[in-house]
Length: 228
Image (cartoon, rainbow, N blue to C red):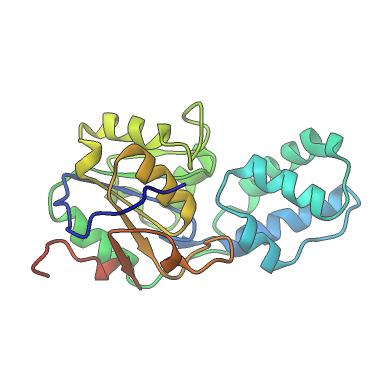
């Protein structure tokens, strides 16, 4: 899952890749509201907020299949659930979510360095771009990529490698900033240094159990040099 050791020194950045859900925006309320509508529409029980929090992060397909399994829904309902999920998410996107404290200040600080920045999420790209625009965060990013923009999703390293290519940056000097082992696994496999926030959705597990270059309590607390 992870390499045996993570370098103790800090690599100076050339570019930044930042996760969305659980890192910049608390979208748990959106997921809960959308899934409630989808499952109710299928005549199935709802899933609770705690289950959703532990399950998000590996893409919408994984989330829907997990919810169907949790409530005893037939796996054959997936295609119908997926269509309803897209419809409901498009209607509710951003209504039950909020930007985390320190995110705007942190993005402003990173943007001021003049280095390329991308948002990389497993959320479908259209939903991600719409959410960033709704929350006033779109202008900080040179590129925005969603889970349907590449052949595979995080924790596979492919999305990070493709994003580095789009930014024109070396993976070894491109910081991945995220909230979960999902982000960290992808970053380590791609050869990117990783910074993890302490407040996100790490599948119910302590974030400091996940190897990283830095752990921060808010995005504006990222240390940008060994001297910070």
